[in-house]
Length: 106
Image 1 (cartoon, rainbow, N blue to C red):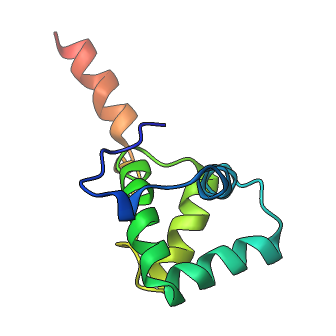
Image 2 (tube, rainbow, N blue to C red):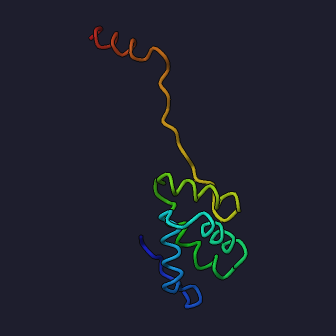
Image 3 (spheres, rainbow, N blue to C red):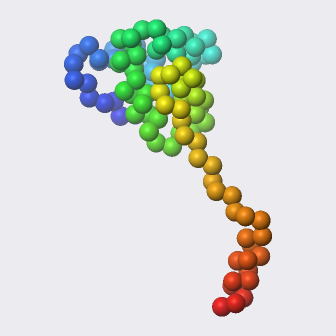
């Protein structure tokens, strides 16, 4: 995980916070600890200011299921944008028959 550069010392994570964040992002916290972490993000402005740049950076790529679940909860609390889940486009019925016909026409 890449840790973004911080412009001042008030936004630097200490070891305990970094470990807590890593466990949260990896889905290793209990449900109770996960909820406490998210509640603290909502209620503690300084904690949120330190954590959100890293959380947002982690959700830039294609999410895995645990990230989607955590992202949905954070989005419900208004802390990040709702994760965009793209579904593959569905092919119309009968596309295979048309493909076979095209192959025979050539």
